[in-house]
Amino acid sequence: MKDDQQNYWQEDGAAEAPVEEIRQDEEIEQDTRDNRDGADDTQTVTWSAQEYVHLDKDWWWYVVFVIVVLAFVAFDIFVLQSWTFSLLVIVMAVAVVVYIRRPPRILTYALSGKQGLYVGEKLYHLDDFRAFGLIRDAEHHSIMLIPVKRFAPGVSVYFPEEVGEKVVDILGQRLPMQELKLDIIDVLVRKLRL
Image (cartoon, rainbow, N blue to C red; front, side, top):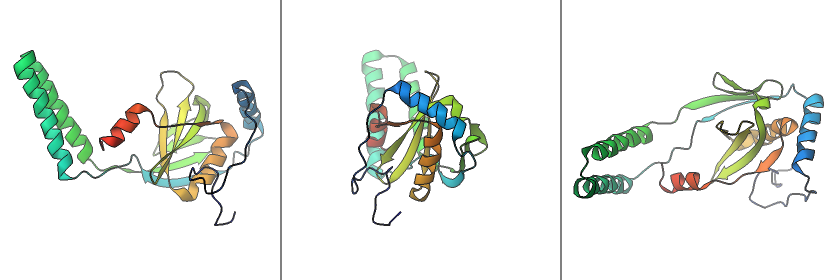
């Protein structure tokens, strides 16, 4: 691949992706089952990345946070007149501060078409997922594995650009790719810099 070409998993639009005929979900699932039987499962890719994107907060963020907490406590004192709500707000505020001050761990990831995805020591079998999608958040790339079970949580994995094509190729052999966008909760969390 030439250096001046855009990877097909990147969204910048520098190179146009080929237009493909849209297929129904049933056809995609059938193709995925066919690929599972004939796929080259010997490929493995390993990388290290942070478990989540850590955004630094300046002192203004903390000032606004304290004002919001004090506003909730004042609302409780003057309107609700219930000390349990104030206690709950203070406990939640302490928990948020502890969580945002904790630096993200560097995890080792290993992806194999045969075994699945290792996140640290935990194995996620690819058979437990129905599809995957790519999410680009500023300069960070991540893959979201969408579970088969309705209420099971998805698995989000950050990866460096160098291994992106290999990761997408291995997952594409076993799972169909879906277009994903950040939902309203993810957008709100990023706006609040949590």
